[in-house]
Image (cartoon, rainbow, N blue to C red):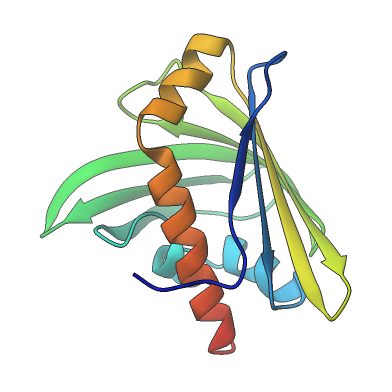
Length: 162
């Protein structure tokens, strides 16, 4: 496993059904933002190392839609889809995120790309779900592995100048 400079924090609020993910990267906000809206880059880093990602739809603009599937050894394991509600260049993305296996479990996510000292970026993802059961189910699903390994892969990609 690759050691990383920054830890990915995953915080579940006790009072509201949210998950907040916070991670810093040694890259400018423009680079981290681009890695979230460019489908070729996104496919290279999202999810756990044990899976590959196939983008099946990608229109990264306000009002656009997206979808991707995760494969292992050529077999589809999971698929996800959503809509881009707001894409504000280098600052913010608001999208829905739905696992095809639980189509009623829509999360509304706000991603902010904050410039921090030294030309780095603090990425904050706030995921709001319908209730605590849905939130706790997401946390119990192993999503933390995909999130942490995905952001480690993103850090590696950014270090290569992507």
